[in-house]
Length: 257
Image 1 (cartoon, rainbow, N blue to C red):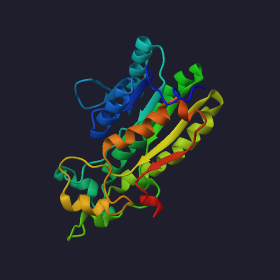
Image 2: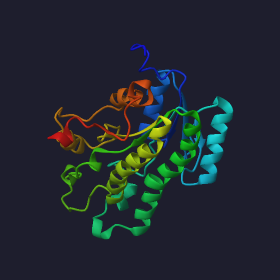
Image 3: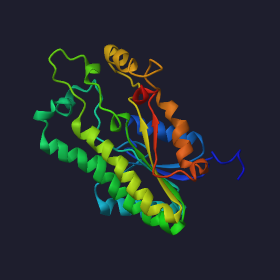
Image 4: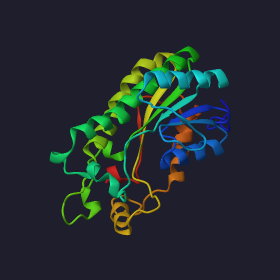
C-alpha cells in the first residue's frame, strides 16, 4: 500500500447525517476539500442537504437507493445526527433541566434521534457494504460518553442547568452499538468505530462558559471544528483499514486528566 495514498478520501462517497448542523457542515467542508463526494442528510432544509428523516426506515432506504443509483457504492457513513442544543440556546431549556425533572417525552425523542436513527442508517448502509466487502461506519460519540460532564461550566447560580442526561446516555450507548456492529461486520472487511470529540468552539458561546470549558482540558482552550478533519479523514480513509470496534477520543486530554 502506497503510504502517500492511504490517507486519501478522494472520490469516496461519504454520507453525513445531521448535515445541516454546525459540525455536520464543518465535517462536510473538510471531507469535501479532501476530494470526497459528500452526501448530507437532515430533516432541516438547507442548500446542498437532502431531506431525510433518519428515524424512518422507508426514507433512509430510499435515500440509500438514490446514492447507489448515482454513485454505485457507499464508502463511509458518519452517524452525526443528534439533538444537542447549544449552551446559548434559551429555547432549549428543557434539555438542560435537572434530571429528576427531565421530561420522558424529550428523553424518548432524544433516544429516537441519537440512537435509533443511527441504527436505521447503519442497517441500510451495512447491507450495501456487506455486498461491497468494504466500508467504514463512524459513529459520532462524545467525551462525556467516557466521563461525566462537569455541570459547573455553566456557572448557574440557581443550580438549574445540566447537560442533557439523554444526550450523555445515548453517546455512551453508541460505544456498545459500535462494538456490536464491528463484531457483526468485521467478516466483510467493514469497519465500525466511534469518534468522540469534546465540546467545540462556536459563535455566540458565552465568554464565561468558554473559559470554564477550556480550563477542563490540557490545552486550556476549546477545539476549532477544523481540528476534527484529520481524525475523520483517517477513519474514512484506508489508513484505518485494520481498526474496528474502537473509540477514537479527541478531547485535548480532558478524560485523561
